Image 1 (tube, rainbow, N blue to C red):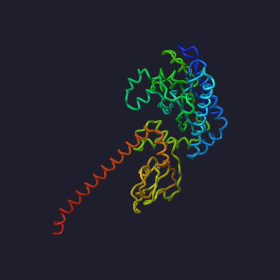
Image 2 (spheres, rainbow, N blue to C red):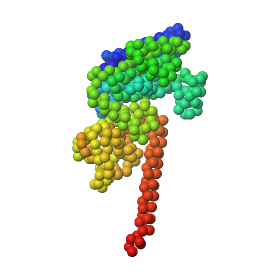
Image 3 (cartoon, rainbow, N blue to C red):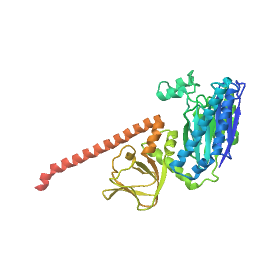
Image 4 (tube, rainbow, N blue to C red):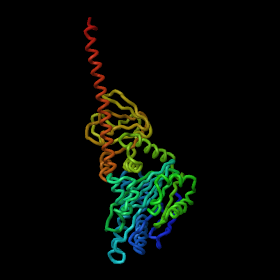
Length: 420
């Protein structure tokens, strides 16, 4: 269950409000759109995008409902595709409207959307409106600005200090409606009781550092927050339209076991060297491609000598690792195995068997490769982590070989004396 509140304001410098928002807790749909193209055109673009996406979501609610009960990758893919298609439909619709009316040529809108279904959320994003998540005393930005300055920062051609004063900081590289189609970022997130999402236009976050969101949220009631954010932006200049939508996730209707498992999945992922250096958003993207699998006691999960392309993380239960029939290790919740299957086709080096009923999180090579193709920065970080993991293993192996050689040399040296 969620409660949500929103407020949009013209600001102190503009004559018209080109922002649009949707706060529909019954549908579980929340939108902020920041129109561009001048008076009338910007308003038309943002309001039209909001309405087209709402209509498409209503017409296909069964796909969102399925996400709340179906944990398969197909259900997740369908929900993300639903969000992307909805935004693409809005993009094409606005583009056609602009072609038909010369006074609206070049109109478009940024767009950020959160669709809630059970304990899952689907995010869709184009442009520089943002979504923040406040969870467990920390604030995470779940969207990445599609701006020229953000691209320059990613490329390392400017510093954060230069970005703050760049004359190009408001140049958008993606928008809904400027062209007939647009690249849409989507993300599936687990929802925990107490989560708070902030959707906002750049009229707010342009006056707000990311590390200011958490202190502003703490100690305030959700219903008070939109006005508090709008007042802050106006106090600091209010040069643009300002929109803030706050969505609070309650514990009502949430299964404790599901919440506990979702938390365990994230905690376990963050401890794995392969994923440790990813941002929270990037780790969330990895979790969105992970599935869960349960094994009864005694069942082999992977078999020595057989091929495999999956990484397993123990969420509940206990497993043993066996080499040539000899038990060499035991893993409990948080332990992981099979990561080398993500990068090569070599046979499994050991057998892993469930000692008791065991639930695992599973990430497949094909799904991970698909994610890495879509997220180039994530791919670079993961490849670098692979190098570090392999380097650590090589260093450890060399150390073990060196110790073995020393022991062999000592044994050979004392052997003549032992024979006497």
